[in-house]
Length: 147
Image 1: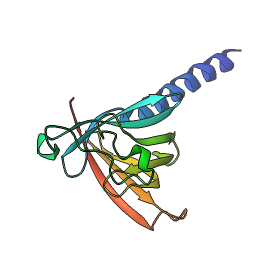
Image 2: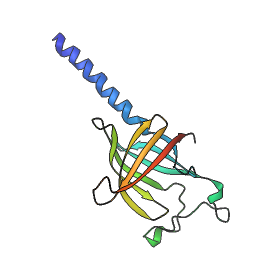
Image 3: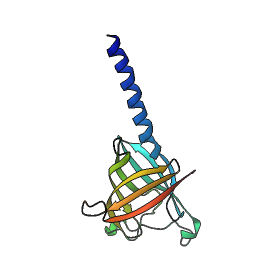
């Protein structure tokens, strides 16, 4: 019985540690060009990322940029502020990465399969790829910041 109790507590702490690692992605991030801030948070058990800020230099006629490259013409007039560009990420504790997600690039209107990993507490690396081939893609570095 004592072994069971000890094993129970050890597994509880291991699960708590994994959850803590998974939460490292949550927060506000500058994109690699430091023109846009993205808020990453957990929703329905998966991590999503939403654009919450863009630098004023990107505004046109006093308005934030539009999603004008979106392949769906009905969405081309929406603002990129509030636009969800990351979705579906889950944490893989063995690989220490978030995977199974998608990333939307408003500059091109394309959506890519994506995974990410923490290079440090303040540096998130993401890689978007096509055709299920991870090495066939483009990497991006995001930097932790505040809203």
